[in-house]
Length: 360
Image (cartoon, rainbow, N blue to C red; front, side):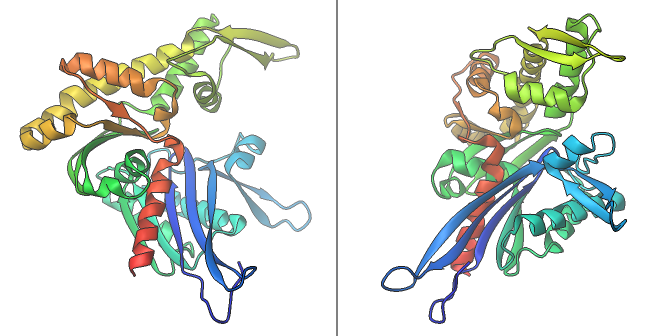
């Protein structure tokens, strides 16, 4: 980053989503461009996305313990890699220490800006100890010299879906976060969170488990895949619009390989998941919202429901949700999602951080 004697670069604005499957960090690091007639402040957007996992190994030369994180850790040490946020939060001291090590290593290796403001997205989970541990992980990592603040993940994720700025903060809308560890839903009124709802009964992780089970059934128990492979099948092949059967190959114990084709295992799991989401949203979340805020309920349903989270990446899921919820409620429902749901929470958090940096 360049600097100038006359012009000081503004603090960086950083948005963070430490997720159970993936961590995403979006930063807008201002810098000074001195190529023109005078110094002009510019900005550079950096996106870091990696699996939330780590593995350790001993250096072959020095014997010192080394840390790998993300895709490298999952690929090179599948037998010992640790996913420390499987439940969505670092719930105990051991997971908090692992998460802190993972995140601090990520900040250092990726060269993330430390001299600015940080906003991080938090799940709607009633777990004070876990939320406190997450706050400590962020605050002790070295980022956020100006400030560190948290906002609900569903609000952060909805921001890129509603507009190019922070229009969502001044809107009334419903947000549903289709996450790996929880299904979350809430109403927002000018940034205020109303009737927050969360359940761990309907999750992206459960979809992965079902895919693994259904692959075994579809192949007459000749093929067993792990959860990570099941997740890769989901992310690569699940598609409500244009699903195509696909072929894969596994190595047989004792040598040789077995080629197999998957026709229904992936989409059956995703289809069941969506039915369960619609049931939870219609019969639990919306029922509670109507009971607590009937006028807000009516206003919110006249506007598109915002879907966020990793499962919203499945092609056609938003439109299928719209159709199924409309049928369940017997009224026309619209739904929308950000262009990049997997990046949306960190992107929205970064926009909030940028606004706070400018106003500080």
